[in-house]
Amino acid sequence: SKKDVAVLVGSLRQASINLKLARAMQRVAPDNLNLEIVPIGDLPLYNQDLDAETSPVAWTSFRERIKSCDGVIFVTPEYNRSVPAVLKNAIEVGSRPYGKSVWDHKPGAITSASPGLIGGAVAALQLRVILTNINVPTLPQPEVYLSGADKLVGDNGEILNEGTQKFIETFLAAFEVWLARFK
Ligand code: FNR
Image (cartoon, protein in one colour):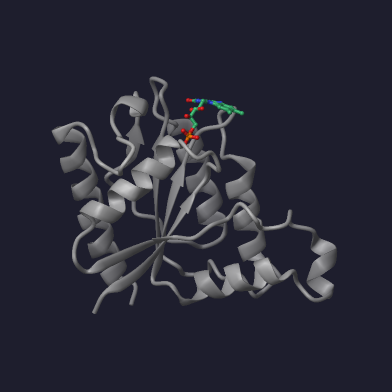
């Protein structure tokens, strides 16, 4: 049966390279994976006070969406050598209230993309540490750090370079195998 994969994109800008990469992954994903981009830009900033009260509706529906999925792909830019706040905020929201984290045992994978030379690898590695903390078993290999990525993904979710396309397909195939180990 098809696996339901939530894709979280750590950039809110319309022309985002990472959003284009997410769209490209939707197109080339194996038949058994259904990738859905789950929006995170409207989640109110995490505030621990609200754990004791009624959570904002956006938080609740995000938590339910993650709880019901089979796995998560984090598609992240690098901001100031780390994970953009919008993505970190979504992680915080999903991790609380204490003891009710929706991330626990949810298999994950990371891609990063940057126009720069190291492809957002520093952010991706920082994210990997965070995912360890919230108990997301994260696909080890292949590590996808797309450098010069503005030249690699087109506006309509096409990958502009055959080698890169093959690499992304290999990554998604590995993630499919990874998911099967956790259900
Ligand atoms: C950046 N950028 C960036 N790039 C990088 O490789 N390492 C970095 O540390 C940073 N830092 C950074 C901070 C902030 C606040 C911005 C806005 C940008 C450049 C970044 O990679 C570039 O803008 C990408 O295009 C962002 O990803 P999206 O929005 O295209 O997906």
